[in-house]
Length: 201
Image (cartoon, rainbow, N blue to C red; front, side, top):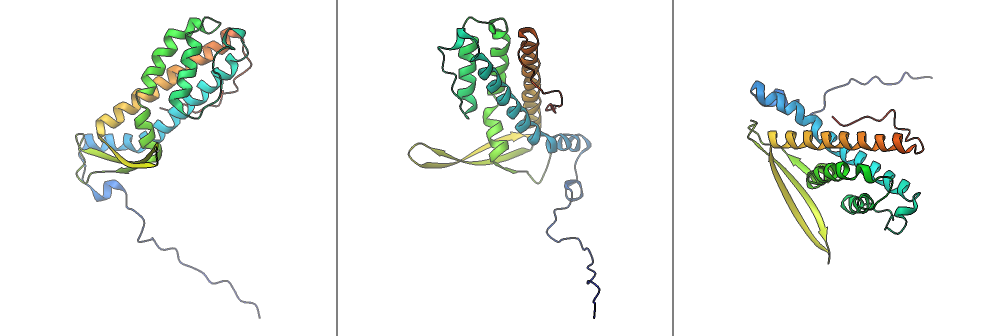
């Protein structure tokens, strides 16, 4: 005797978090900043990841020019070390030299936000209950130091500081990618195949 499958009713889970706007009364100005905050964390991670990839691509292509072969062109996952390798390339006379000053300046602006990127990618974000533009966002992050020293670090930023720094980082990332594309076009390097790249906003 065949049985029909039991029908289940879909019920809202008690564990689902209601929308922020339904739990906290926000001023129109603060609400606008919270909307930006919701996109900021992803924008930070996306922008930094794109810059890291393009830095690696520049280093890989630099290995094809004899002017740079005496430099350390080895791969590293560390963003700051990767930036150091690229800076050494930019400081060496060669095909990429005309773009050195501009790229060094942009890299400096990007690395200024490396700590923010680490907290955004690996940290816990805790919001205040009373949200205004001056309210502090609290980030918590565990970091392992040499000798097995595990430390919990914190970062406090207001909503406005957080979104402003995100805009600075994503803007610098877009500038960096624009210059790299210019290098590729003018040096006639192999295609980047990045036409469908989603740029951080």
